[in-house]
Length: 501
Image (cartoon, rainbow, N blue to C red; front, side, top):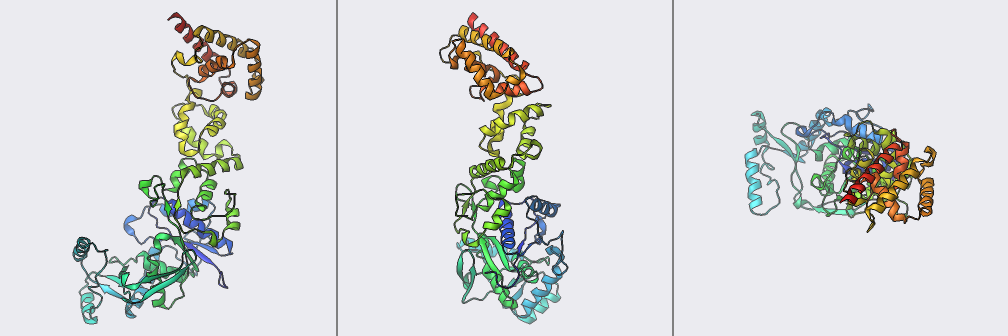
């Protein structure tokens, strides 16, 4: 498959802002394929759509790729004089040269159609329920007419001259042998009126000049690839090997887009997902390792990657699966707080409780046990607010089933005296559980009738971590076990008020 020529893949994003999840997957597969076969991974910036450019986007792209370990061998930040420059807006003379070559070979032509005419044409086609396409109005203009319009500085674009008969075919490493009827292909624009090339043209020129051997991109480019093949033939160039990845779909099996939710890689990083988990997850969007194991590091992905294991059907972006993979990576990495992006996000959610970093560090393991993953951190964090401020709750919540308030009060009084007599080292959840349950049995209390009001007194919640875990956190916090004893006192007072009623 690799032949004698050195493998060269390229990731060619447009600097239009955030990095789409699908774009990161393309970069990953480019990287895996190049590394698998000892080739080069090239970064090229396709900035010919000048209206959508975002300042700083190129620097952000390079930064994200490096953060994920997908370090290009070449690119704007690391040029090879043989192939530079790597930014398309710096290569305009090349495109102009090759566009004129196509015109001379009658493989392309000047189109002088006004915007108004093209808009009317589009409306007519819509009315007739025809797919939008150029009608070839300027396709057969005489050389005399063309020169006259150019002499008048008439605005023009350059269009590709597609054969009207026959088929264009190519082989794809994933989708196999594909054929397209030329009569269904449009004479699309190669060079716009502003002198900038469109994607279909610039990427062919650049891929050839940069000696790209394998073009890896999304399934949405399958239908435009025949036009690329025709350009390679028009120039007499050897076309690269094409390798199209299946679409990434949302849970409704529609193409993943902004309407589907978050699609920016940056958003998932902000939510606290680990880079290792994101990369691992997107590797499985269209690639099946055909093993029971699904947790892979980047180096393991390189080792296991095979084109034959790339699927044709669309891949479902399942946030629950991403959460699962994130949990597995947390177990593998055993991160410290400062290295954990999810911990940092939890801190931001506690901005109303300043100075509680120590408490959060103690509580964080409990948070991790109770959340599915970063996707529900914000919702679940509200359940842990009682660690940071005194809870408010109705006194009736302290009562276990039909337990009388007087008995609940007595139970809490006994538990408070017991806890007040323990040493700091006794407040380890597992050891404390054994001691506390032994005391409850000794006092003849029912377990539920003792532990339920204790847990509610500490948390103010119907559902919360167990009292042993809560007490361990309080004992290790700056305020010490005193905060727990004060809360028990408050609960006893609330039960006294119930008794008076």
